[in-house]
Image (tube, rainbow, N blue to C red; front, side, top):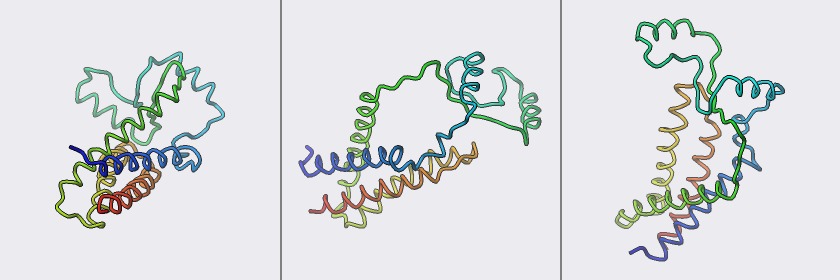
Length: 180
C-alpha cells in the first residue's frame, strides 16, 4: 500500500512538472522556435486545405508500394531541396479544460511510476534520488525529442531546458521529501 509520504511526493512532483510545462510553453516562451509566425499563414492554410486530408505528413516522400529502386531515386533527387513536416487538421479546436486535465493525469501517472522505482532503492541518498530522477528526464529527452531531431534536423534546446529544469526540480523535491 502506498504511504501518504509517497502520495504527497507524487502530487507535488506532478505539480512541479505541470507548472514548468505551462510556464515553458506560455509565459517563458521556451518553445517559441516551434510556433514561428509566417505572414503567409492564411495562404498556406488555404492551400493545405485544398490539397490535404487530416494527418501528419513528411514531404517529399514516396507512395505506398513504391519499389526500393524508386525510393532510392527519389531520395537522391530530394537531396539539397526543400522538405517539410506537416501536422494538418481541418478545424482548430482547443478544449483547454480537457487538455489541462489530460496533461495533469499524465504527470501524476509518470510521477507514480518514478516514485515506485525510487522506493525500490534501499536507503537512497538525496543524490541517488536527485540523479536518478534527472537521468529519467535525460533518457526521455534522448530517446524522444533528440532522436527525432537527428532524423528531422530539429532544434531541441527547448526540450533540453525542460529536461534539466523540470526533472532537476522534481529530483530535488523528491530527494528532500522522500528521505524525511
